[in-house]
Length: 304
Image 1 (cartoon, rainbow, N blue to C red):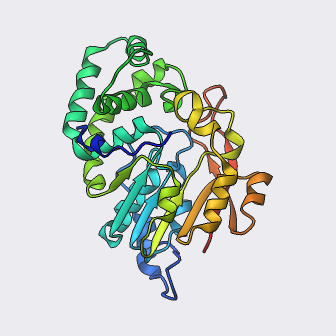
Image 2: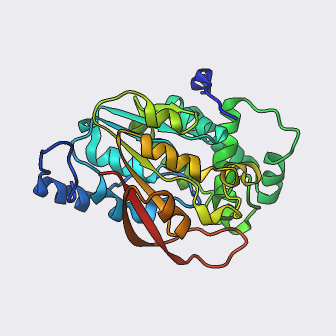
Image 3: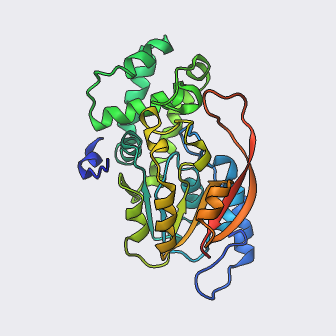
C-alpha cells in the first residue's frame, strides 16, 4: 500500500565518474574518501551499507545536482554523501515505503528535540526491557505519527539486529544498544536532514520524476533473502518485492543510477543490460534465525 502523507511532517571525490565529458578532480576526490563521514546513521538496519561506504563512494559521480535514495532504510550512504558533498549537491530526496521508518526520519528532521525527550522519558521509565518490548508490540496500539517514530527507534535498539517488527526482543540489545549515548546521538543528524525531501512512496516515483543531473543510489531488498523477513511487519516489505518489475523500471530510468544487490544468477540475468561489478561485503547483521555475521559476494550494478 502506498502512503504519501504530507501531514506527517507535523509529527513533531574518490575516483568518481562525472556527468558529460568533465573529468573528476583526482586530488579533491582522494580527500573525500580519506575524510569519510563522522556522523553515522542512528539506526541498526538489517542489510544496511555502513560497512560498504568505502566501496560505494568511489562509484558515485562527482558533478551531480540531485541525489535520490528510493530505499532509504538506515541511510548510511546518504549520511556519508551529505557530509562529503554537502551543498555541492543542490537537492536531496530520500524515500522509504516503511511508513513507521518514514515517520522516524520525518520527525528527526522536524522536531528532533521532542523526539529525543520522549525517547529519554520512556527509557527512564522502563527498567525491564521485555516489558517495554511487549508494551510497544501490542496489537491494539493506536499511535500518532510521532508515537510511531518513537516506537520505531526504541524497537530498533532493543530487538535482535534491529529488525523491529520482524524480529524478537534481545536483552543484550536492550542493555548495550538502548543507551543514553545512542539517544543523544540523534541530535547530530538533524542538521544533515535539513531541507531534505522525505517521502513515503513507491520507489518508482523517484526514478521518473523530472530533474537535472540526477544520481540515484538504490539498495533494494535482496533476491536471495526473500525468506528472511527482515523488512516491515512480518517481512511484508521484503517478501513482496517484485525484482522483475524493478529491473524493467531501471532499464527505463534515464538518470544515472547505482544499485547494490546480492550476487545470484537471477539478478545477473535481470540486469544483463547494465554494468556489473563484483565485490565482497562483511555483513554486520544477519537474519535473526541465523548465526554469526558472514561475508558474502555482492554486486554493484550501474548504467554509466
